[in-house]
Length: 417
Ligand SMILES: NC(=O)c1ccc[n+]([C@@H]2O[C@H](COP(=O)([O-])OP(=O)(O)OC[C@H]3O[C@@H](n4cnc5c(N)ncnc54)[C@H](O)[C@@H]3O)[C@@H](O)[C@H]2O)c1
Ligand SMILES: CC(=O)N[C@@H]1[C@@H](OP(=O)(O)OP(=O)(O)OC[C@H]2O[C@@H](n3ccc(=O)[nH]c3=O)[C@H](O)[C@@H]2O)O[C@H](CO)[C@@H](O)[C@@H]1O
Image (tube, rainbow, N blue to C red):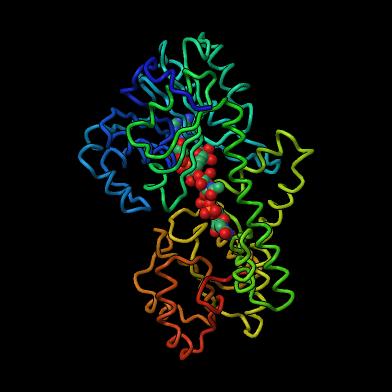
């Protein structure tokens, strides 16, 4: 549904309180501050709050970093460790899984909503941006607001606008992606659209709360299942001794085929988690989804097997592993398949030196000097940061001269299955 009848009626939004200023909340806070809105960024992480206020954060993307350091952000964004009053409260806190059950852990959503309740006033908007299982708004958020004496949809507006930004391209995507906004009623959904209006160039689509919750999970599940399919093709290709990349390129020449890239595993804060939220809602109809999840979860083990095989010519080799983030060109190590592979190989007893140019704790200055210092028997290239790919390509003849085995695919990309 997309109507404009509320356009005139909805109250403007001047002060936005963003609760949770991590990967999702901070870019929103920055865009709003840049657009001249008064923004309060709330986070329980005191160090993060201090770093936002003194603009000393080191963000993945240069354009986001420039935004953080802009005069408008300095003027309009204030970070705090607890909420204060505002016209709109956007909740962007983590929604991980409980382990080992793999059920949604909504404790941070509850804590965040709890923390804003004392500051809510009639007419305010609560907008959940975190990824949540269907019915969370109805069964968790609505009862909390009701118990606090507010009727959601009447005194308080309630919306769910899941975030779709792709880490690595956040600056562009937060502005240009289309946005789905579910509301407890149309007025709430349209009020939430006012939050994004100052910077959004994509289209806005309005729906109800549950549809918005489900829509986000379907998007990530679609990607996860398709990557699992690519990974299975790669395992089949491996058993046939074929370069699967080439076969996938050929298959993708079909007008209706678009196979994704197989890899060493599916990491990050979203794809390994969100499909399980659907399993919680209807386990009877998630056979394909959970099978795909398990296939992707097993890829680091399959990759470790492949590396072991490649290392079998050495006795007690020293191995240099490159890359520790969950995907290329990011600093984010959450649920990183590369780290899982290194952990597994270390458990086997391999001596592994592990570095990543983009991660503070695993830094090095110069790749050639690092190799000279470590003197590895083999280099395992795990994550394809653009910089590492081109440096390794350049160093290839020298690495061969040193009789160091380079474990990566033939086209210079990181190890693939
Ligand atoms: N990372 C992504 O690319 C991405 C993209 C789309 C959606 N999401 C979803 O957005 C949500 C947030 O993810 P994220 O990656 O930004 O997480 P994050 O860990 O980077 O940031 C969340 C922040 O919330 C803070 N926090 C936790 N509890 C709090 C509380 N009670 N009050 C205030 N702050 C609190 C944490 O300290 C942290 O800084 C999750 O539901 C995630 O699934 C993430
Ligand atoms: C539907 C969708 O696009 N959702 C995106 C996704 O962002 P992400 O950064 O988590 O997603 P990916 O880039 O897909 O990476 C995930 C892992 O999969 C590996 N991979 C990827 C492609 C491939 O062909 N083969 C692979 O093996 C990759 O290496 C990495 O480990 O979730 C965010 C949060 O909800 C969304 O906001 C964002 O839109």
